[in-house]
Amino acid sequence: MSALGIDTMLLLPSLKLLYPAPRKEHGFLPPCFSSPKPSSSCSCSSLKAVFSVSCRKTQYFRPSSVCLVRRVRAKASEGQSSSLEEEKEEAEEPEFQVVSAVRSNYNEIVIVDTPDSRVLLLDSTHNVHSIFRKGQKWTGSYWDEFASLPAIVPHGPIAILGLGGGTAAHLMLELWPSLKLEGWEIDAILIDKAREYLGLSDLEKCTEAGGVLHVHVGDALSPLAVVPGGFAGIVVDLFSDGKVLPQLQEVETWLEMKNKLLPHGRIMVNCAGVHSDTYSNGYGITYPNLSSTGSAWAENSTIKALYKAFPGMLSWKRMAEAEGENYLALTGPFPDLDAWSSAVPGSLSLNVKKWRPCGMLS
Image (cartoon, rainbow, N blue to C red; front, side):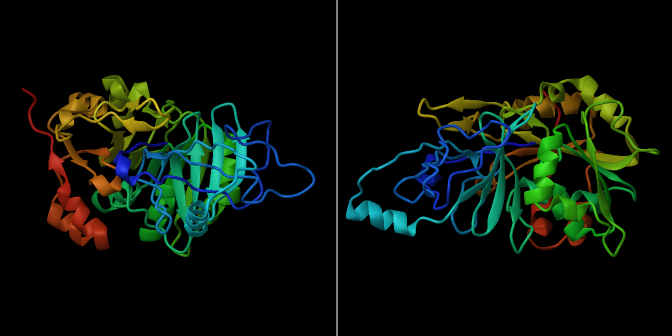
């Protein structure tokens, strides 16, 4: 599960739901959503959700491209009169529908449908953990970077720790259809919903080239999260309540994970922002806690732990502002960027050239 940054000017001011209210499953409705009246379905005037959006994985929720959101808060308002100007603004707003709202033992799970995407929101902060694009796979965010990992690891299975709704798995099998992926996710209900709404079940069927995703429900950091012989690569995207798991800031965690790799295997990690944390502006909008410069990898506590576990064998990059500003880390010798670039398509070819080795700490 995952995190990124935004500029307040990029916040989408309001989105309305033009569909009936979300179903109530397992006794949970998203905050401020009320059950629809039995007499009729909800109309625009009777159900209007205003979304305060901040992004944890990508930058913002743009109506046409639907990049990622960090947080969704819904406020129901009924019977409000509107001016001609307000009605004009509403007419220009895109349609959204909450297709599932469930509480599990681990998460509050909300899946939002838009004309071109489905977005998975998790936990009490409603951070985005996955996005499924209709008609294309690429997200324009750090998930795309994970799809470049197979080009620089030996042949063998690749683990995804923090599978979420399967965004990284979709991208990797799209680009490398013969891959054997092993995905770990602790929340069984989340997996069921991802199969139903996010196309996860399609990935569990073998491709013509023999690639497939095997889903494991359990603790991604457990000693049992292994395969015989080891992994060629490991993707780590583990978040809870908007923060990187605290275990990822411990050197021992990475030393244990290193032992799960094949010789010459690598780990690629979503490290979030500077301190892998957030702050609130007091108005219900949450932002990544980034430093004023945002350029020092040593300010990220997860990368610092990785640096100690992989001395001299760690690279980093920071995603562009429009892509969420997340920090990523990569273990192993510094790769040949030209060779790596030639092995991946399109924007990935340019993006991989932005990796830099972690220098010596003073």
